[in-house]
Length: 248
Image 1 (spheres, one colour):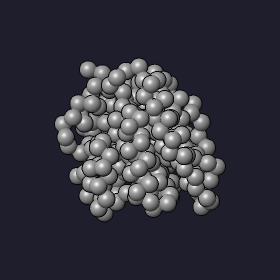
Image 2 (cartoon, helix red, strand yellow; image 1 turned 90 degrees about the horizontal axis):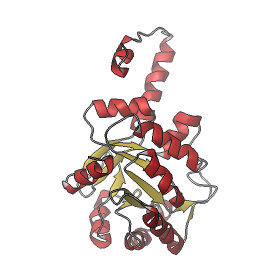
Image 3 (cartoon, one colour; image 1 turned 180 degrees about the vertical axis):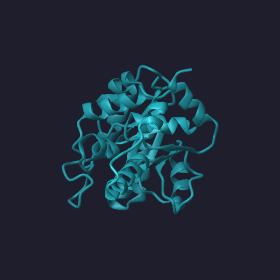
């Protein structure tokens, strides 16, 4: 069974799929080894692990695809990848071996900073989703439409209207960024598509099909490295890692 068919099957089971975020191929393999059925790679982890920078929308399409490719080649479980706003990247992500991407309507040079935030006009964003759908070669490949309208403007109605337009353009799932649990059921009812969300430990997730723990690996790796370096104990036993990686 292909990874795309696996992901479709997991979603058709009707339960909420918890998806830890990887930062690289090794963390993805650890996620798989601990029994998780899917793994995520987002721009936040890619920016931090690959370039040591914050995620402010500066990553190239090529950087996102190559990080996703390295992870998809390391595991047998489906990989969900962040395509930012690059709707024309779908063929590259398909070739990289991932099972799904999400495409967002957040744009502009001040993205994810304290500066002014900008969303694409809804018609333009919907056309980008439609273009990605048209470019899809594998019908099982999942295209998720993400709207940051609530996150940026705290405008639930605009977020729902945008996601409705993206669903009509052919999105398989929708991603209402930062919409709280109290409103998720309303989004799902009015948009009529399964929901992808980011984990919020203070809220319920039963209205979501997919919960992304997007910073899981990168945050734990950073914390562990920081603590290890602070102790001054630079020696480490490589044997457990070598055993995991399959050294002979």
